Image (cartoon, rainbow, N blue to C red; front, side, top):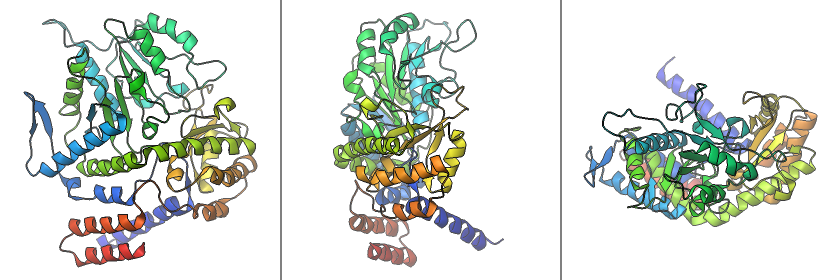
Length: 476
């Protein structure tokens, strides 16, 4: 097969997939989102093939490549924009995923805890960690099998010294604060990790901070907000509650490119000030070399969008999630969570479908009917590998213009498929086409004009690029 044939075959499949996911499907996977046209244009710009390694040495930022003045300014602008979003003084922009962001912090905490070791004293791991159990919704990257691997000490029984937050018996999705105080005092964690991937309620950050704030040394508190990063403030504001560090990925509720972020409210000349130094060194040279400069540029654009539309977008996402949960319940589905809370406080809505079949089979059936979500093990399932539930999220479809009332017809299609195994593929595709204009970004006409300028600049000697750019502007 010639290169031309290979290219055409690949493009055919790409176009088919783009059409399906962007025009015919309701994308309800909570960990996904679609970046705007202009954010995507940033990703293919010149920095996507460049390097800009740098580190702080003797109080000065040293760059090890030339031709980086532009991207240096972009990284600083992105840092400032992200600090504005969080209302915090520090942000580290070079992690390229949420998992990497967590691992950087775990490495840094380990280094920080070893700063005062005596000469000849062996390097030690973090003595004790507290986190959310994987089977109760905890994020994989915060587990010993994930990014925590190699950074926590072992108990006498050979298992990592990790204690899970207790959960309520009456609501398996909430932490039991009545039991948590005693467990904290017994476990004496050096590191406390909040955050989940099955995430419908706030975490008790202030409750825990009030208990540990006078410990000497006080545990480091981090909040992995990967799933709810785009809801910072409207859902929960960990820094105001006592968290030291927020990590996350930038492509879920935060509608940017696929990257990671580490933010902190650690101030200079405080007991944790050197932890931030360790975080910066563990990013580079500890974890990255090239930190994907095209997506960094895209993240700056996405953060500008988020800062411009934060209040409106966040309120709509939470309103839509509650409407989606209510509509699913009225359609006869087993929605998880407390109805008094509207079943959710985030973008996620969880369902139990075990009476209809295994979660993975129901998720596949929905996919075949143009509704894309993911199967999920619920807290009372035998293991993480057994799934009696589905995990859905409304953030991406909110971005495509869906409002609370729009989720009721979708819940009807969803229920017909799950409860009655009805084929609703064509009806779903027709309904999806009503929601094709992206919101919470520049209007398409304005974005297309700017995107056209970017494309022409990427291929300055190509008449084809200029023609494409002109046609793109005309198209909208």
